[in-house]
Amino acid sequence: MIDRGHPLSLTRQSEVLELSRSSLYYEAVPISARDLELMRLIDELHLKHPFMGSRSIRDQLQDMGHQVGREHVSTLMNKMGIAALYRKPRLSKPHPDHKVYSYLLRGLEISRANHVWATDITYIPMARGFCYLVAIMDWASRKVMAWRLSNTLDASFCTEALEEAIQKYGTPDIFNTDRGSQFTSDAFIGILENHGIDISMDGKGRWLDNVFVERLWRSVKYEDVYLKGYSSIAEARQGLKEYFEFYNHRRRHQSLDRRTPDDVYWSTLPQMQVAA
Image (cartoon, rainbow, N blue to C red; front, side, top):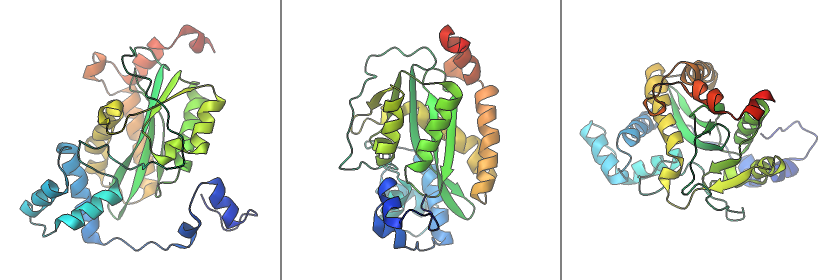
């Protein structure tokens, strides 16, 4: 994050964080209460009907009594990083100068902990604003290894989550992401390379490549975020901390034969890693 009191110049800080210098002087225009409500409804509609584009969502909103045009719906969807199913939700947009890696999971049997980790970012609505959530997940067990909230889409909150996951649980053989700029940044890729982790990236438009993380977002929102209506990032951070503890340790999954992610993770972790 930019620190205006830091000895490093703003220009140098922006270079390190891979941010545009013009963004340092941008003052965000407050989002109206009406738009925040529309964004919350768009988020819910997208989770229920991910195939819907801006036209269909506009129609649904109008049926609910909201007089809104397609262009405005499209603008709000872009701000949220939401797109119809035939395209990957684009919270994390690709950076033209960042290296893209091949997809390594095709035909791969993933049945043990720390074989493959994955990550993604989602939009979190709040009572008076919104923020973004990133989570690192173990693919085989669905265990959430680490997560972070941020009010911006810079790479730093993603690298913080990655570093915490590695510190707590060691390293996976493969790390799978989409091609978003946060995950192709030098900072994020550098951590993976320094730990000898093979890097896998989803193919363009392959929304199913990170399907387990997408299912996590549905659970997080319907079982926690929408029910509680957090009023601030601090409140959301505490509430999500409690939810992820429940999700990992007590929430049983049908896809895991009614076991919890924590149970599957520790029971399938290679013995040499357990001993370490």
